[in-house]
Amino acid sequence: MVYATRGLVESCLRFASESDPDTVTISLSVTPAADLPEVDLPPETPVFTHFYYPDSAGSVNFVFGVDLGTPAGQTQGRFVSHPNGELRVRQRDDFHQVIFVAVPPWDDESVAVFDRRGEEQPLELLDVEPPEEFPE
Image (cartoon, rainbow, N blue to C red; front, side):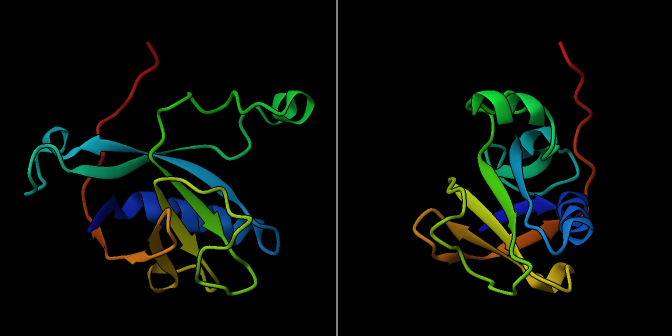
């Protein structure tokens, strides 16, 4: 089972809708369930709660080919949009531990989650707010 906040998935779907007909790729990170007091899950359960803006550090990425907008090793998942309607992982997708794939019409029913082998995983959306994060 993959857990994610409803707000995170809705935000990613909004990015996909606004980018259509272009694709969008968004890095996703987790918060342990222990840090989400209103969730009834084992404390160590990872819940996808945060994303990194897809265009952050874009000009640096273009020039140097390095993604400086996302902290290294701090994302456990990836959201990718497929405006062409393919609700599956494609070989050219940026593989990650967990891959969220969305297709039009960009709603809760048009998103699926896959592991890095491309096998679909069950997704449960949680109606909770993630903890606020502040830069150190």
